[in-house]
Image (cartoon, rainbow, N blue to C red; front, side):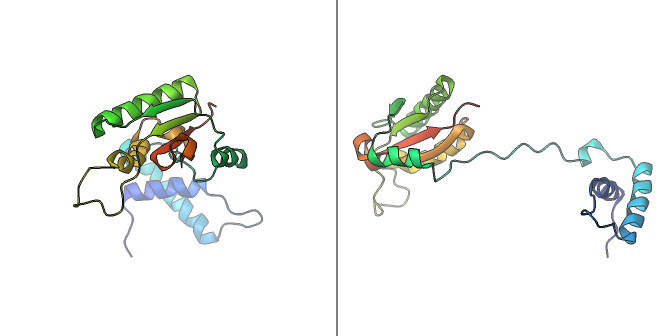
Length: 179
């Protein structure tokens, strides 16, 4: 069995002090003894600030595949009214990416909830040589663009648009309500 380094002992002692037994249960005697021993050794050995983990940021919220029934109904029957529309047709991938980021930032700043993004139809399954970026290139990239955007934590869901708004050639980007 490997012995803990002095830094590891200090970290373990800090962790052990933060743990409390379940209600109605006492800590086993060997745990109590180990805590005391580690506690004493931790006081003797200062832990460098670099050894302690930094505060972990909260996990990023990801778009959810399912919305509540009122959203589902409005998307399904085509009554969802977009607050803003951005058409990425006939733009290069770089220009489309920039336009999308700008439109997302504006929609979040204005407190809008639904952004209709017209991308063009998805690329057919067999569309030529590997690496070919022809028809449907924007649609193929948009998921990554949304995930990497500065507003990704503001996106509640991304859904295919109703045929009235472009069907498979467009997406609803549903933004979270301001909190």
